Image (cartoon, rainbow, N blue to C red; front, side):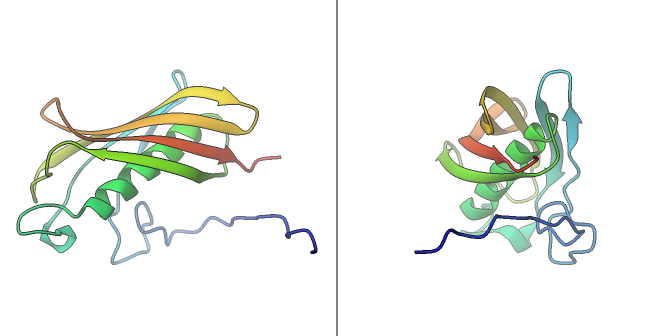
Length: 138
């Protein structure tokens, strides 16, 4: 069996989470904190992202937990991809709530970063994730 071709990614502004040119996207804006290997964002999610009535869909929340982990890693480089994510939902996130999203690098071994991500509302934990991220920078 032939070796797989190298994996390359190309940035553009169409990302579902942070892309400014994606009209269906979340348009999240992340702050990257290089000094401590973290990232954060605040956003309000509307009814178009609900699952059950008045509750944000868990897939959207998992996507946000994944994205903030990538941004935390961007404090250490440019190109990263998620290799594994484990999400724990603690409380339903109500539609229209201002959420605080945070990611923090907790370990780095070679090109693999371990990141803890969380979603809080008013200081209360609603969802969290452990994310393994691979650096693609050479």
